[in-house]
Image (cartoon, rainbow, N blue to C red; front, side):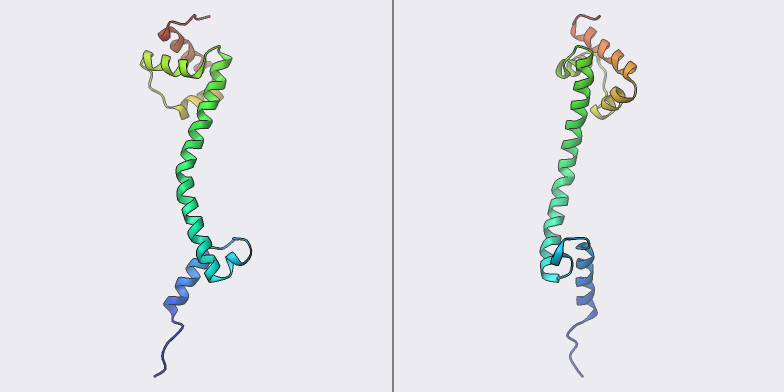
Length: 122
């Protein structure tokens, strides 16, 4: 009986890896050996950047809140401190969304923060 060399399991494994490499540039999408390295690298980048995405979004929210606070003559740090003193617990994502979609509600939060810190309220 002849020996089976190129079995279906081997082919399936290679096809699965090449499927992950679909859309890669040049030989990385067609050749198994280069695709294997490219897929391993891409998976490590994906893992790393899932963590980085959270940092980037938090930075974006803080920037938006800071810009909205400065329009109300208040710094971001004093605003957050004022909210803490006032006992208002709201996350930065919601604050950022509020600053964009409902500026009046955001300005009332700024006023509450100013009252809590003792800053002059206009």
